Length: 341
Image 1: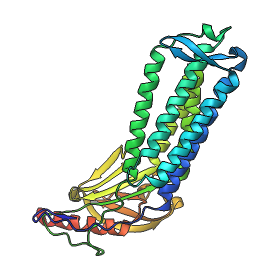
Image 2 (image 1 turned 90 degrees about the vertical axis):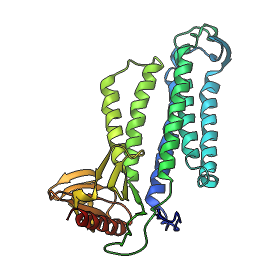
Image 3 (image 1 turned 180 degrees about the horizontal axis):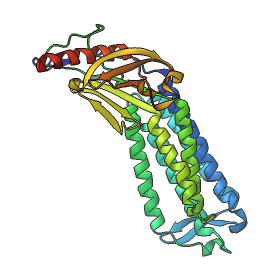
């Protein structure tokens, strides 16, 4: 907390992130790494009967000026990808605290760059008699670089948001915290479900495989298949992690790696807050659930932060340190009632 009057900053209590958060990140990285490796190997092998051997792998300007055997063209990017995976693991182990997001950016950008390059190489060589006859490169290079930059940036931002400061908390006290007027504070807590993240990764990679197969010329683009896997992947990803934040403005609950979309309640909107033990069976399952008990964002079993609005509706979210979040919200609710009373 920071006292706005004096400008003095009190040490913020830090709470270690739950193991589930790190486990979820590791699951996501593992699935992404395996999926990219499979795509790099599968694309040229699936088209081997329609490719020259050797095939063009380098272009000087628009025209091909270098080649590799089919085996080398298959194994070289796969080996390069394994090196990037190793480097990202080292970065996460030794530099993640100082530069959060570095490992995620390497994995995301490297995977998009290599799969894009492999797809364009297969497409350029497809049904050509010699590698010298490969199609010229043009807009493909620009699109690959733009996609690589976007993936790198998004992964960097998402990982930095997830790896930020853990649960800054006001001074201890429960069930209602005393928050002096004019004092700034923030309570932040997150939760992830690694199994939902794994499901989102599998669905997303399946959709990506369909797009890459079409881009390489191996198959026609079937939007029904791509959308049937891609849209559920986005929906599951948005429900696989949640962040709850309490400030003087009230409670904000954000979904997904970027905290979007989000829901917000001001202290005047709320009647009470509490911490309550809930299970997935009581909530109706995992993820974003609506039943007779209200709305529940259930990512793990255990204590949930539960708020009741002045209209009588309840919203619950399974995050760490729910007791302290509820106590702080009750203090804000009491203060808002005094001001309006």
